[in-house]
Image 1 (cartoon, rainbow, N blue to C red):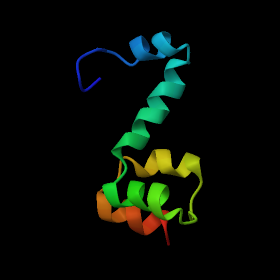
Image 2 (cartoon, rainbow, N blue to C red):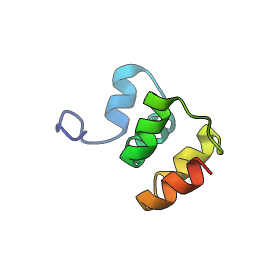
Image 3 (tube, rainbow, N blue to C red):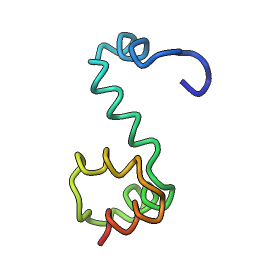
Image 4 (tube, one colour):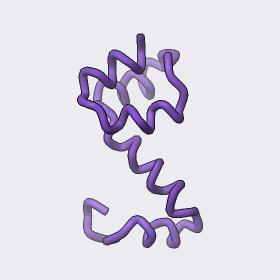
Amino acid sequence: MDTGEFSTIQEPAEAVGLAKRHVSRQLQLAYLAPEVLKRLTCRREPLAVSLNDLYFLAGEAWPEKEQRGFS
């Protein structure tokens, strides 16, 4: 969506054959703090929260994301 290829969430959902809600939730993970993403992908640290909780962390300020995700 950042590149302008898609203007709504519905468009990429249809393009890959997924539900709009599923794509919307996955896009939220793109807004996790960079340190949280790095710790998840590079360090393979265990989380103190579930994947479902990460969706809600995406809307918080970055320091809170790291603190709540790995406490």
